[in-house]
Image (cartoon, rainbow, N blue to C red; front, side):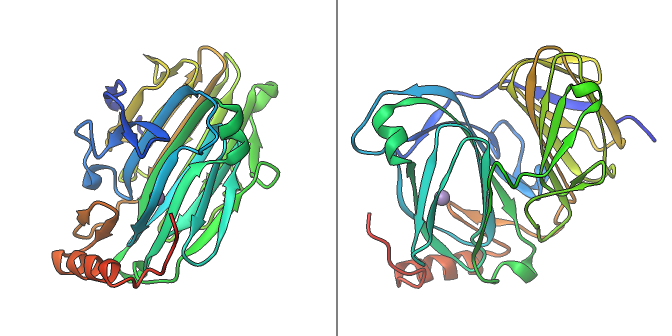
Length: 290
Ligand code: MN
């Protein structure tokens, strides 16, 4: 066992709007954390808590494609509705996660759920993009919905909270979502004083996002809404909650393949990006009304 050190603690960069419904701080690939540096996690948009006023017309982002990867949407506050070109749709409620495998291509839209939009209120959401290896980029699209009731949970000692295992594994508890490459996605919900030990292979790209409260990582204070990029110099590190805290932990084996990315398409070569744009232009991802 060797301690994994902190490479950088990153304050939230200036936010931007995605459509009119998501006000996000982009940590990956912004903040100097490239897609390759955090592979298989190639995008992290963090909608830090913000109150939306009531709106009869749900805010959000209109019809757009994705191809070559997965989108993972985690709702901490507020509710997100989605619809896609296969006719599928659903709502991601508070404490729930949607793991969408876009793979060969989907067309979808993401909005504040109608009743949430009408009432207004606090909105706090993470969207993470997980890359796929070349061999899986053309597989069929699918959804995994991890509802609150179905979320696998590992209780921390002395009643000091729990670790929600969205994907991967923690202390023998297996994740709710299946993945194409080895990775862990954990939501640590810790009461003040809880200490969580994490250990993963040194080559796995690993980072944390402090969703609520304040923590110490290997004894270093990290405030709310900050991102911690861990080095690849060791296996073990600790997260201690100095207040009641929620921390999103991501760790995964890098996908050692070329990345060609253009907006919502993430492939291996420029030719494949061109092909994806042609498919989109020709309506190959299906049809969806705005
Ligand atoms: Mn999308």
